[in-house]
Length: 113
Image (cartoon, rainbow, N blue to C red; front, side, top):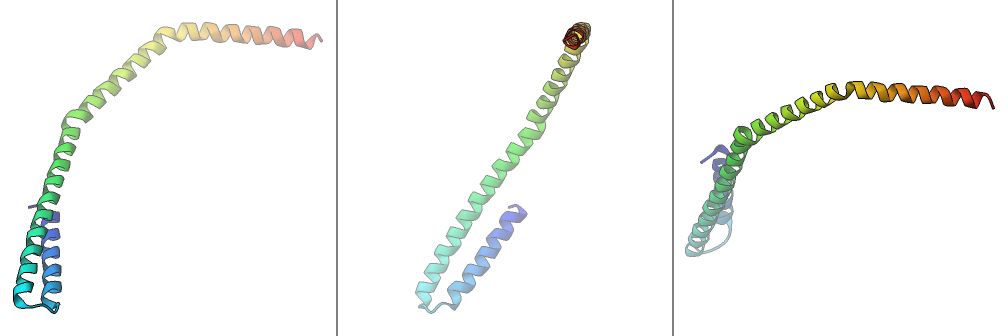
């Protein structure tokens, strides 16, 4: 049992036992309530433990399988973008030069008015 589950179990058990023992009931009724309470606390602690184990398994899967794959895909995307930029850099420069020429021509023609 993990530290959290163990602490949850013992805290609930001690708090519930104190409450049941200080309540005004017959011995038989108190024992039955205590038995039921302990069984419920054990069941709840078991469910919490199972949920925690599932969460830990999911985290392990994330760390060992998903994260390395995401890093690999990220690196591939960066490589593809770098290659795209390198392959198209001359085109970008030509387009920018044409835009600058057009702007210069437009400014020249507008200044005539």
